[in-house]
Length: 144
Image (tube, rainbow, N blue to C red; front, side, top):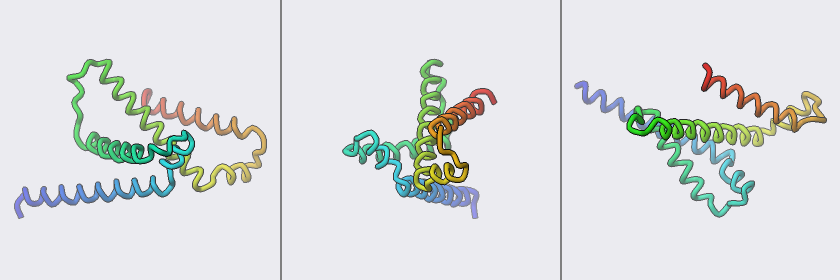
Protein backbone atom coordinates (compact mmCIF):
# COMPACT_ATOMS: atom_id res chain seq x y z
CA UNK A 1 0.00 0.00 0.00
CA UNK A 2 1.25 3.44 -0.82
CA UNK A 3 1.56 6.22 1.74
CA UNK A 4 -1.10 8.28 -0.03
CA UNK A 5 -3.58 5.41 0.14
CA UNK A 6 -2.90 4.91 3.86
CA UNK A 7 -3.39 8.64 4.52
CA UNK A 8 -6.65 8.54 2.56
CA UNK A 9 -7.91 5.57 4.59
CA UNK A 10 -6.94 7.29 7.85
CA UNK A 11 -8.64 10.51 6.76
CA UNK A 12 -11.79 8.55 5.88
CA UNK A 13 -11.78 6.82 9.29
CA UNK A 14 -11.23 10.14 11.09
CA UNK A 15 -14.06 11.77 9.16
CA UNK A 16 -16.41 8.88 9.92
CA UNK A 17 -15.47 8.97 13.61
CA UNK A 18 -16.08 12.71 13.69
CA UNK A 19 -19.50 12.33 12.12
CA UNK A 20 -20.38 9.54 14.55
CA UNK A 21 -19.27 11.59 17.55
CA UNK A 22 -21.07 14.73 16.39
CA UNK A 23 -24.20 12.73 15.60
CA UNK A 24 -24.15 11.17 19.05
CA UNK A 25 -23.69 14.59 20.64
CA UNK A 26 -26.61 16.09 18.72
CA UNK A 27 -28.74 13.07 19.58
CA UNK A 28 -27.82 13.48 23.24
CA UNK A 29 -28.73 17.17 23.21
CA UNK A 30 -32.02 16.34 21.49
CA UNK A 31 -32.72 13.60 24.02
CA UNK A 32 -32.37 15.83 27.06
CA UNK A 33 -34.43 18.55 25.35
CA UNK A 34 -32.31 21.68 25.69
CA UNK A 35 -33.75 23.43 22.64
CA UNK A 36 -37.47 22.96 23.45
CA UNK A 37 -36.88 23.81 27.11
CA UNK A 38 -35.02 27.04 26.34
CA UNK A 39 -37.59 28.02 23.73
CA UNK A 40 -40.39 27.39 26.24
CA UNK A 41 -38.66 29.52 28.88
CA UNK A 42 -38.04 32.38 26.45
CA UNK A 43 -41.48 31.98 24.81
CA UNK A 44 -39.92 31.65 21.33
CA UNK A 45 -41.16 28.19 20.34
CA UNK A 46 -41.80 29.39 16.77
CA UNK A 47 -38.03 29.74 16.30
CA UNK A 48 -37.08 26.13 17.18
CA UNK A 49 -35.95 25.30 13.59
CA UNK A 50 -33.65 28.34 13.70
CA UNK A 51 -32.21 27.20 17.05
CA UNK A 52 -31.60 23.69 15.77
CA UNK A 53 -29.95 25.00 12.59
CA UNK A 54 -27.77 27.34 14.64
CA UNK A 55 -26.78 24.45 16.90
CA UNK A 56 -25.79 22.28 13.93
CA UNK A 57 -23.86 25.11 12.23
CA UNK A 58 -22.13 25.94 15.50
CA UNK A 59 -21.04 22.33 15.95
CA UNK A 60 -19.76 22.14 12.39
CA UNK A 61 -17.88 25.43 12.58
CA UNK A 62 -16.33 24.65 15.96
CA UNK A 63 -15.22 21.24 14.66
CA UNK A 64 -13.55 22.94 11.70
CA UNK A 65 -11.93 25.55 13.94
CA UNK A 66 -10.62 22.86 16.27
CA UNK A 67 -9.21 20.84 13.35
CA UNK A 68 -7.58 23.66 11.42
CA UNK A 69 -5.56 26.53 12.81
CA UNK A 70 -7.48 29.76 12.23
CA UNK A 71 -5.24 32.71 11.45
CA UNK A 72 -6.69 35.91 12.89
CA UNK A 73 -3.52 37.97 12.42
CA UNK A 74 -5.09 39.92 9.56
CA UNK A 75 -7.73 41.31 11.92
CA UNK A 76 -7.04 44.24 14.22
CA UNK A 77 -6.07 43.04 17.71
CA UNK A 78 -9.22 44.42 19.37
CA UNK A 79 -11.60 42.70 16.95
CA UNK A 80 -9.74 39.38 17.19
CA UNK A 81 -9.84 39.48 20.99
CA UNK A 82 -13.58 40.28 20.94
CA UNK A 83 -14.19 37.29 18.63
CA UNK A 84 -12.16 34.97 20.85
CA UNK A 85 -13.81 36.26 24.06
CA UNK A 86 -17.29 35.95 22.52
CA UNK A 87 -16.50 32.36 21.63
CA UNK A 88 -15.57 31.68 25.25
CA UNK A 89 -18.72 33.42 26.48
CA UNK A 90 -20.99 31.41 24.18
CA UNK A 91 -19.19 28.20 25.08
CA UNK A 92 -19.76 28.97 28.76
CA UNK A 93 -23.43 29.68 28.16
CA UNK A 94 -23.81 26.43 26.26
CA UNK A 95 -22.04 24.39 28.94
CA UNK A 96 -24.19 26.03 31.62
CA UNK A 97 -27.38 25.22 29.72
CA UNK A 98 -26.19 21.67 29.15
CA UNK A 99 -25.39 21.21 32.85
CA UNK A 100 -28.74 22.70 33.83
CA UNK A 101 -30.60 20.44 31.42
CA UNK A 102 -28.74 17.40 32.70
CA UNK A 103 -29.47 18.35 36.29
CA UNK A 104 -33.14 18.77 35.44
CA UNK A 105 -33.34 15.49 33.55
CA UNK A 106 -31.81 13.40 36.31
CA UNK A 107 -33.59 15.38 39.05
CA UNK A 108 -30.37 16.12 40.90
CA UNK A 109 -31.76 19.13 42.75
CA UNK A 110 -34.47 17.27 44.72
CA UNK A 111 -32.12 14.37 45.43
CA UNK A 112 -29.37 16.71 46.63
CA UNK A 113 -31.73 18.70 48.85
CA UNK A 114 -33.11 15.50 50.38
CA UNK A 115 -29.72 13.95 51.06
CA UNK A 116 -28.20 17.10 52.53
CA UNK A 117 -31.43 17.91 54.40
CA UNK A 118 -31.26 21.41 52.98
CA UNK A 119 -34.66 23.03 53.47
CA UNK A 120 -33.93 26.76 53.67
CA UNK A 121 -31.51 28.83 51.64
CA UNK A 122 -31.54 26.60 48.57
CA UNK A 123 -31.46 29.57 46.13
CA UNK A 124 -28.29 30.75 47.86
CA UNK A 125 -26.78 27.30 47.39
CA UNK A 126 -27.54 27.40 43.65
CA UNK A 127 -26.14 30.93 43.33
CA UNK A 128 -23.00 29.97 45.23
CA UNK A 129 -22.48 26.98 42.93
CA UNK A 130 -22.91 29.19 39.85
CA UNK A 131 -20.51 31.84 41.17
CA UNK A 132 -17.99 29.15 42.08
CA UNK A 133 -18.23 27.70 38.58
CA UNK A 134 -17.71 31.15 37.03
CA UNK A 135 -14.74 32.00 39.23
CA UNK A 136 -13.17 28.58 38.67
CA UNK A 137 -13.60 28.86 34.89
CA UNK A 138 -12.15 32.38 34.93
CA UNK A 139 -9.13 31.24 36.91
CA UNK A 140 -8.58 28.26 34.66
CA UNK A 141 -8.87 30.15 31.37
CA UNK A 142 -7.21 33.47 32.23
CA UNK A 143 -4.81 32.80 35.09
CA UNK A 144 -3.50 29.25 34.60
